[in-house]
Length: 212
Length: 212
Image 1: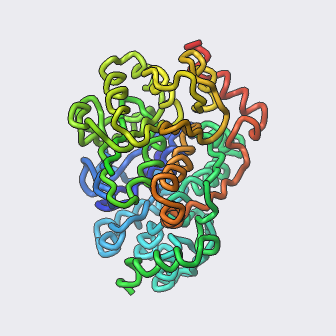
Image 2: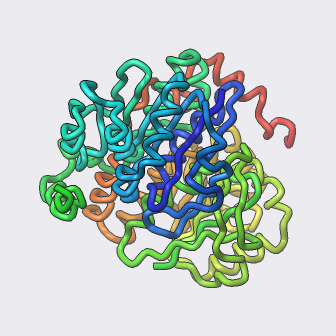
């Protein structure tokens, strides 16, 4: 099972590493961190670099594609080489997935037309521009395409994928292995639950307001 | 606020990246991925490498220290250079933290004697050898030392730390930013909740049985 995780300048680390930590433990998993050029790729904050061991043209038919989000997704949406690669490998995948604003890259590649999809809550409305139906759920499955909400939702997405592709027992064993028994100290992880003042503060600073 | 995250061969990626994704967004955060030598450091699965931009001797007084776990922690526990560094920087930190089996490194450095502490559920008993009191809680705070349970617990630990060091609003804003509203598809993330057969399967394969 070949798993390609796309890296790009200014990606968000947890978007990529959440699914990685789940998918790497599936039977026969071979994970390939992939970018335009091989070598270290820096996150949004700049202080973390993950090595892309594979350049785009060396990964042609992954079984699973994971596209993380992050501020760099904006540039990716205008990058013909990336969008062509996404469209091409999508014809081979068993599962094409995104985390956070990675769904906007799938949308820009034309893969979400007429489909329900999710994204980071601040970016959800953007999906409509590309013919997708924004859906404020944590994990949205449409055929072989799975989109996840913001950042940490990639863990839930990957466990859901493992249960579908393999079985519940393998997904549960992986969940227990990563001791994923979440106990956040606050219940502030979605705009419907966080204090309104905090929701508004994040909304007022969002890059999606500037980008329209 | 200088944040040192220790990397070592065969660390577990999510142990490091969970806290990173939370702590990097705190006011004035400067994250330094640190290892014996600077350069890429490979995870347990080998398919992911994070770059250590800093060698041990260049990081002398971080405000926050994060020690992730992973199979490589065993070698670390016999590594005098690492243990000396941990003891030395601990005298400067505001917070010394671990995720998963990273707590065994703190224990081996002699920092957990007489203290309650947690670890990955499969490793919890090992803490007793070093004079710590194993505590099956997700996040355990003892003065300025915070230990977290397995892998994904680092996210909860880091949010708890942010609330203590800064305030609840900053922790909640970060939680909302990473949309940490967990919805795992199963309730199998701890040995008290997972099916007994899966708990036993993981226990029978555990490296801690071999290591005694």
